Amino acid sequence: MHYLERLIPLQHSPVAVAAALSATSECDHVAYEEPDQLSFAEDPLWDFAFSDAGEVARISEKLSEVDVAEWRAYGWAKFELAVTPRGGMPTDDALLRLMIPRREVRIRDGIARLRGVTEDDLHRLEERLIPLEPREPVGWHQMEPILNGDSTEGYKAVVAKGVEAIRAGVFDKVILSRVVEVPFEVDLARTYLAGRAGNTPARSFLLSLGGWEATGFSPEIVTRVTPSGEVTAQPLAGTRAFGADEQLNQRNREELYRDHKEVFEHAISVRLAAEELLTVCAPSSVTVDEFMNVRERGSVQHLASRLSGLLATGGSEWGAFAALFPAITASGIPKRAACDFIRRSEPARGLYSGAVLALGFDGELDAALVLRSVFRHGGRTWLRAGAGVVGESTPARELEETCEKLRSVSRYLVEHRPHDLAGHGRLEARHAEKA
Image (cartoon, rainbow, N blue to C red; front, side, top):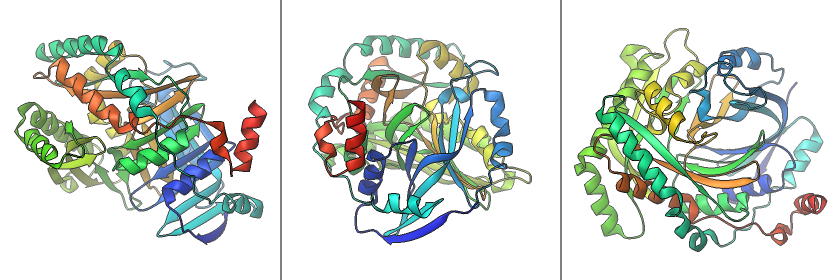
């Protein structure tokens, strides 16, 4: 099977068009932004759900059965993919979900490349390339008091236990998170539009797939693997607030470099990332290309490094993903002991600190770390944020760090209003049917 294609000059913001495509979609879909393109995919032709961690080794085998030329797949992996033993999840609860779409749009350099199985698929996409109108977020004044609400004392207690375990030699670092419920219905497409304007993410996404809905502004990747076999990791660890006050931003930046706790946390993360790359890459190819720069990510700034290597002979993109997942900066060091502590101390994470994935028939894989996101599943909507805990951590500071990170999303939440769907007839009809 081959996709039909159509090239359309695009006069509008790719993010606004992706938001509109998502808002008017009546089926599973994923919008995924990379540095050089933004993709939108919907209506699975092929749909893969892996509910057992042991099954993940069969991903390449399953994808080899796909009879679509030059396919690209999109999906997500839950954090529990790395911490759940074989047979440890119910069979109807997927750990990893991938779909190859019937319809796809890839936007690059002002051109929308439409792909579909039929001419009608192309027409249905083209008629929806109308940007979604933004609206002023309303979440800021409603959410700010909640960020310091009921979950704070419990979180500080868990951090204190984490510090105690570190000082006892159980592990060196652990990332501990907390959940903040959102008390109103969120318009995810407009939240994506507002949040993307206010953030500077490494990747962004907007999805509804396998019963999960989410939008987020990922500060870093889990990994990227190119068709030629280059593997990249970009750990971020060490955090301070970032805002409109340039003098305060500079003071916080200087404090990041002086803070022994933050520098130590970052350095051990880089060390482990290098060790993980060495398990799948030719040893002589592994390098630290950037070390301890600062990256601004919405309401925070981070110490950031970049490492790379070339896949060893016989290596694969999935081997690289398995070696680097879950991200060091969302789990801990060593990973197994840190993940065991997380599993005992927190409710299941689901997509939080997992990955959103885009991968191609040619061996390319791009995996965004799912942080700075809003989630909807099972009738709930929530935010989640964590902080890296080491021996010098204090519960009060780690709590403050979670608030700093939550604001990357909470200030851009847009409340859902049905009348805002005017101009998108299909979406109006869909809501009328639900009513």
